[in-house]
Image (cartoon, rainbow, N blue to C red; front, side):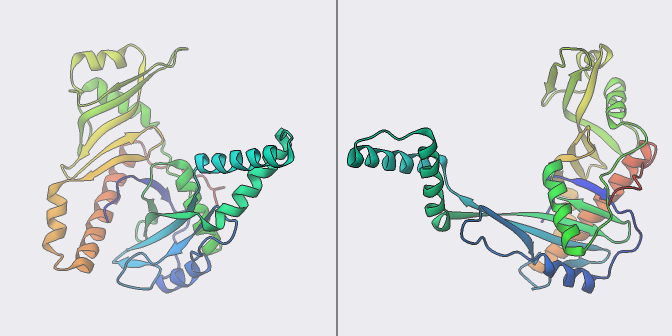
Length: 304
């Protein structure tokens, strides 16, 4: 329901298909279970249990969900089966098994076990903000976010978006905030930071549950350390860790915003509606303020 991480992709076009069109196109990329010797399968599924539609629309936001099925076949189980087959050959044929034959046995074992292996399902949620032309993905992993975007582009037959970049480096702003002990705008320092040495050692220093306004913390930045992750709070509504690649980790929506959602949610569907609305509005407002403090967006016109 509430995002715990965030990667932001500004859309490079103001023209976004309507909800019905998006629903229809996501069906082309709909999830299908693993078949036979497939290790995994990915595809879009309905975002809620309340509807069979692929999207969950709330005013200017559309929730979409990518489902991934992975076969669980532990290496210990495979290796045990391989050893048993090798032992059987030694005893029955009275000969040693070479490396190449052992590799072939392993492949045969996997082919036999894979169709009967257990499956693990996972989901990645995202919001398309049609008003502000943003794609918000509930992950801080660049690889996972790019995979989601790739699947979305395949289903939508193109989806022009590029990862968020700004005029000023985020590391510069985070280091300035740590040096001064005060943030700009509606941001406040929390209690976690990660700094890296700009020298050859590339040493990493992490502070957890520390007073970031303390002199010893600021001294680290004064002596050449650059802030790569910084714990922040915005408007006393959202706490998070901001990273050097402008992704957000450990997002927590605080009591004030959660209570506001609960006041408008008499049942599960209404609660999801209110939560999505408040979450999207708050995240977008926070992102827009941060981007403004960083001198505005830089847009890669060649991104697809």
